Amino acid sequence: MRRALRPNQFARMIENRFVRGEGDFLQEEWIEACTNPELRPSLGDPNLPIFLGIDASTKHDWCAVVATAYHDESQKVRLVQHYVWKPMPGQPLDFTNTIERAVLELQDRFQVQGAFYDPWQLSALAQRLTEAGVEMREFPQTLGNLTAMGENLLGLFKDRNIEIYEDGDLGQSLRNAVGVESARGFKIGKPSAGKKIDLVVALAMSALAAVRHERDGWGLQEFYREAAERAARGEPPLPRDTYLSDVYEGERDRLAAIRNACRKCGKPIIGTFVDAGPLGRFHKECWSA
Image (tube, rainbow, N blue to C red; front, side, top):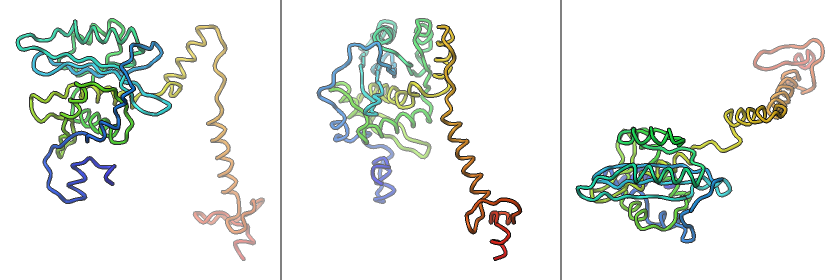
């Protein structure tokens, strides 16, 4: 039960204790367990699909770009690389020389599957990056999206299904974050303006995209992509995959055999029979016996 509930939920619902609407987002032991001292930021891998989360602010908060990947063998989300910029008083950040440059660098060095961002301040930058070939995905900060990314990141840390490398800014941001609960949902928040959590927000968006991403080899999109590539190369069409139809036909025959068997003796019915509706079918002699 404790593992299935957020800490404040457990205290309120199970221990019957009064709790505030907010509390520590992550426990210290979870952060330490998910920090791999041997893991380092990746310099690049053109065959590695990555997912970007972007959190932007020009003046008061930090700006962050976080890249994660989903490791199929371990079934864990892994931190690949991150960037963070801290605006100085009176010197707003230039998104072109910070976020845009970082995203284009990642696009050159990895397979960027999508860059997820809040369109409120980044519409112009997103348009330029889209024209440069980056798959930009709007992720507005609605209550539904905030709840989804917060609960997903909480679950990844609680269940040790995420690996991060050691980094002072990231570690402090994870410890700064609080979980804010209300009757309408759950989100990641900060206890005060000085406690920065922008890296956590970007990580949460990136990790949610990595978890939700459809693995290669599954789905209609992948099927038709491969079929189109074969046609372009002049190769014959893909052979028909009969696995599901074979399963269906086998199950149909099995159910038909069950339906056409006497419910009393279990033997197949040939010739006349008694149909007793929901009770099934019977040999005449079995029904009258």
